[in-house]
Length: 259
Ligand SMILES: NC(=O)c1ccc[n+]([C@@H]2O[C@H](COP(=O)([O-])OP(=O)(O)OC[C@H]3O[C@@H](n4cnc5c(N)ncnc54)[C@H](OP(=O)(O)O)[C@@H]3O)[C@@H](O)[C@H]2O)c1
Image 1 (cartoon, protein in one colour):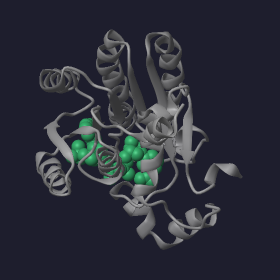
Image 2 (spheres, helix red, strand yellow):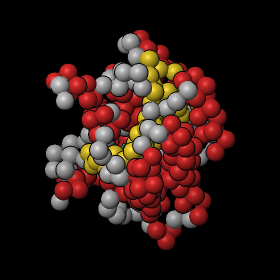
Image 3 (tube, helix red, strand yellow):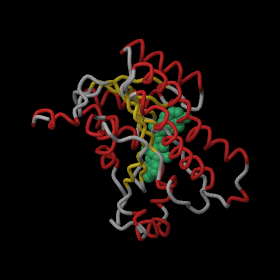
């Protein structure tokens, strides 16, 4: 491989990426990162205002982005999103399953079926629905990269976090299962597993002095992650740099799971 080819390993020019939950937080950072490396990015989420504002900000910086609302837990929204992407681009090269909702911090014996269902619907079924429909389009074309954002809660158990751990653990093994089925068909499937990052999702725990101190005490790097620190893993997994990587999970956690 020439130096020129090696240099373009992370180049996403001419590719189309869909990022769910892209209006804010980690999804926004990854969408910006993919766009910065040349991808045309479709931003999705439930809130039109947030998506439009993010799209305007990124466009002003030179990114190629557009947005469409979709609730990933509703199959009709996911198929409508896919139809819109295919109508505009005729293909999708990368899917980032980032949309997710907060853990509910409750003792497992007090976690009722509604608590369970809310989290599972978005954090597990939402990923399944996007994988199924966008993955089908990728398989038909014989290429694509699916990147699902799980969590350290998909690698180790966390206390008082039953449905969230079940959902994220499910995403991790869904990834391995899909990777096996789709490897011979040109579609790679991987996870990114963040530790504790500075986003809306963790605002409650970061604002709680004692909890925040305990979490930082358990984090070897001694700080929370910043959203842009997830971009490298997303660009790697979407790009030819990871062409022989499938069924894996990249943990980005400041060393949290190393102990
Ligand atoms: N922050 C962390 O420390 C951390 C750690 C581990 C894993 N994660 C995971 O990383 C992902 C992003 O988290 P974040 O911290 O960036 O959270 P966030 O700031 O709360 O953002 C969540 C995003 O998901 C979207 N969303 C929520 N429900 C949705 C649905 N049903 N359909 C479509 N979009 C939906 C939200 O937009 P709307 O509300 O407009 O729909 C928002 O854009 C999640 O899967 C989360 O579990 C985060």
